[in-house]
Amino acid sequence: MDFSKINKVHVIGIGGIGVSAVAKIFLEQGKAVTGSDVSSSELTQNLEKRGVKIYYNHEASNLAEDVDLLVYSPAVPENNPERQKAAELNIQQKSYPEFLGVYSHDKKTIAVSGTNGKSTTTAMLGKIFIAAGLDPTIIVGTQVAGFDGNFRHGNSDILIVEACEWKGHMLNLLPQTIVLTNLEPDHLDFYKNLDELKHYFQKYINNLPVAEGKLIYNADDTSLKSLIKNKGYAVKSWSVNFEDGDYRATDIAFKKQKIDFKVNGHLLSLKVPGTFNIYNALAAAACAREFKIDWKIIKQSLAEFSGSWRRFEKIGPVKGKKNTLVISDYAHHPTALKGTLKAAKDFYPDKRLVVAFQPHHFDRTAKLFDDFAKSFAWADVLVICQVYDVAGREADGQRTIGSQQLVNAIQKLNPLKEIYYAPDLEQTEKMLREKIQPNDLILIVGAGDIDNIARNLV
Image (tube, rainbow, N blue to C red):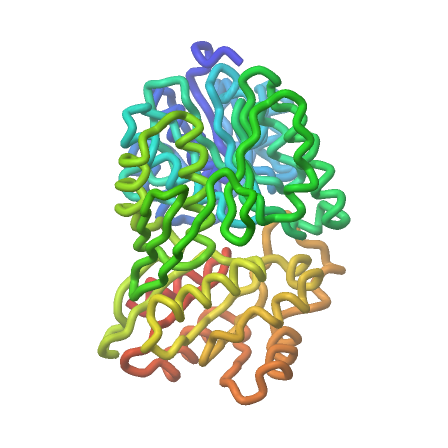
């Protein structure tokens, strides 16, 4: 793709946390950008302030005839009226993953992939590279302080990008370096099972260039270890539980709102909680060392890392409730939920943990149902609202198992705890306000729109 010949871009689903980065890329180049989405948000409002015309509907008339490129969210179907008009006008179309693949072609690309931890690892790694003066471009699926939200424009040829595995989208990238955080059953609306997911990741790894390729992976993850078939690229690993990682965390000490640990003799500290963030930090540190970044820079960057949007994000106290704290987190997979709740207890052991969870995607809820039911043992009070219905990804037959069934299953496992079902966000917030007491820690969890409750409480 010759970017010099593109003067006007239209983006469908422009409010998406990944897709909105496309608009920022072209704005940085001085191009004209328009877009459409179903609702206004902080992301769309930010773009509108920068001159982007956004339509809050999907109509053929939204697409001007002088558009040179249309980029769309993967959830947008082919029969979308804007896509149909683009086809009639022979306007070039790219899905967001396809666009990332084209955009990365002339760059030294570091792709961060895996079931959990992608966004935080990408953010940590980006911060380290910036501190080292390597001036990378960064695209991440969250908003990070010091970045342009989910994007950071750099003047070097280094691109650090979060690569999503849904529908094999990471295969659009041909990175020189792959960082693999972990691999668990997820996106089972597309993958039949874990074996098929591993098959796609094997294809992804096999595309690494032999001479300059680097694979950096979590040696504690047995699914990842089974994929490592060295074909000439460099391979490095990190670990916490096993002794065979090239970068291994030892002497781990969980303290109030701090974690200390050593990696190959170097003392590192984090002010973000959870064993999962030790793994994320190890991934970032291992990759940084493979690019010969000094340990002093790595140590300082990780010590200063304060998290990102909806990744154990501290929102503030509940109005009228003394010594409370509201935290918003994006966790929507059972493993991430368990780790996030445990991290909350580790960092705030003296607080009662009040949790509100919005399951994300009916298919995920049904296929990982038993694992979800076992994910809330650390909660003292739990409110679960109805499943977030993901646009473009749900079929009517998948809506057979919802949140009420999940609440029933959790109650059987935890009969002495306070566990409630709420049919919608309004009732969820009302229940929380009734249950919250002074000194509580309130954890608002899920990948849907439940984050709005966190902002409302504060």
